[in-house]
Length: 207
Image (tube, rainbow, N blue to C red; front, side, top):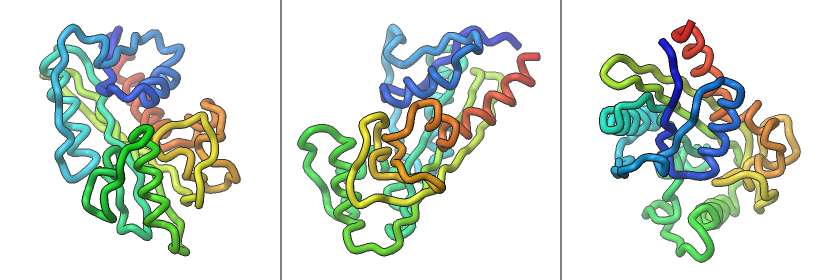
């Protein structure tokens, strides 16, 4: 099997940037949904990261007739019964814990709500989860997962990441994800671990 191009099924610029970094030096051209001539919308309405990722991979792969990588990822906070979970990208807008107005952007609104709910919590344990699905249209697919464990800070720090990175300190570190250099973040992150496993399987298929 020869792979020349892969569509990363996302419009999230931060996520796309990380995928491109992870696929550097592979010789595979990485495309985003914004590179596609026609856009379709796929709603992430499932109850698990895996179900959402599979749905996106199949819908986009079958529509564009191109190999697809789709990911669903999020933050699970122990003291909040693993919320925001699959609602991570739109946590600010759901009823759990009350809705928050978007003032600057959705990331900051999500963080504002999270820190408000965590204000008096002693247990700060959390983990990032990434489930990545590779789908070769009408032939086969597989999935991998990655986790990054850590804890929630009491205020945002750092400008290098996106999403909840400014309020998440990985185990063994004193800096937040948003304070780490991209290479270091990719080495330890949930997404980096899931993509590393995926790359191993792709290499076997391509040989």
